[in-house]
Length: 465
Image 1 (tube, one colour):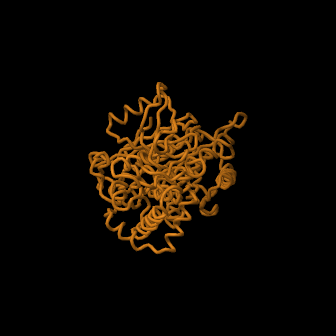
Image 2 (cartoon, helix red, strand yellow; image 1 turned 90 degrees about the vertical axis):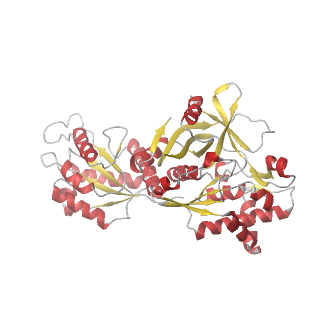
Image 3 (cartoon, helix red, strand yellow; image 1 turned 45 degrees about the vertical axis):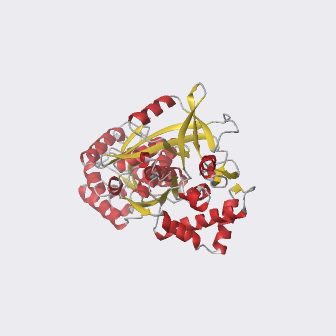
C-alpha cells in the first residue's frame, strides 16, 4: 500500500519585499519535504527571478512547468517567504488539478524593519482569497504561519500527504459488486450513477461466474492459497475439503479482481456460499484487505468506497464492522462486530477458523465454515460511512478508540469494544440521516484528512462528528 507522494513546490514573491528569503525558503522547504519521506519537483531557480512566481508571465511559466510534469506530482505546496503576489499564483495554479497546501513564513521580532519584514501572514489572506474566487480548493496549515524546518510542519506534510493519497486514489477506480444485493438487506441499495459522477465505476459480477471459476482452480493454485490462509488463521476440527474450498474461492475472487481491474470489492457473502459451497468467505475478505483491495461483505458497495478512502489515507488496511451492541451501562462505549473478515494486520496474531453459528442454525452443521474469529488490536481508530441519496454521495467521519474491555467468550464472531465521548450522538446521527449499520474502520487519526479529501477536493457531502 505504500506509495511515494510527490509535491510540486511553488515559491511566491512580491518585488518590494525582501527577495533574498526566497533562496532560504527553497532550501528549507526541499529539506523538509525530503526529511518527511516525500519527493518533490521544483521549477529551476533560473527560470524566473529567484526561481519564484510573482508576475503573470512567471505564473504562466509555472503553469507550463506543471503541465510538462503532469502525472509526476500529487499535490502542490505554495510557499510564501514574503507577501507573495496573487496574480502570478492565480495563473500558475488555475489548472493544477491536485490538492494545494498554502504555507506562510512567520515574521520574527527584531527583523521587522523594511529590509527584512516578510508580511507573509497578510499575503496568505490575499492568496487564499484569489484561489477562493477562482473556485480552486486549497488546504491550510493548522498554525497560520509556520516555518518548514519544524516538527509542526512535518506533521502538516504527513496530513497533506494523506489528503493527496486519498484524492489521487479516489478520483477514478473500479469496484466489483460480486453477487446481487442480499434480498433481505435493502439497507445496502446504492445509486451507481451517483458514484459514476465522481469517477467510481461499479462492475456487477454474478455469483455464477465466481462459482464457475471456483470449479476450475488448479491444485497448485489451491495449495498456494491454502498456505496464505494458514498464515493468518488456524484450521482444525473441520474436514480438509472445507479448507480446500476456502482456498479455491480465494483464487477465484483474485482472478476476478485481476480480470476486471478492481480496486475494491463488495461480496454477497450469504447465503449461496453456505448453501452451494458449504463455507463462509470471511478469510477471502481478510486477505484482500491486506492486499490493498478494499473488500466489504454483504454487497455494501457504498462502504467499500469509504474503506478504500480510509486505507489510502492510513496506508494500511481497513475493515467493515457492524455498529452492533451497547456495552452494558457505559454510555461512552459500544461493541463493533463482524463475523470474521477483519484483516490480520488489524488483529493480534492468528485467528481461528470456526463455523458461522447463524448459518449452522439455518442451514445445518458445516454450512458456514470459514469465519475467522480473531482478537482485534486496541488503539485509536477512524470511523466512516458512505451513502448515496438524491444523486449525491454523502459521508460522515468520526474518531474513537478500540479498548481492551472484555467481551464474554460466548460472543459470536470478532467483536471489539469502542469508546467515544458522545457515541450515542453518533448513533442518533446515523439513524437520523439514514446511514446503515455498517461502519468502515482503520487505525489512526485521519478524520480531518479524509473529510478534506472527500469534501473539499472530490465534492462529496461530508460531515465530521
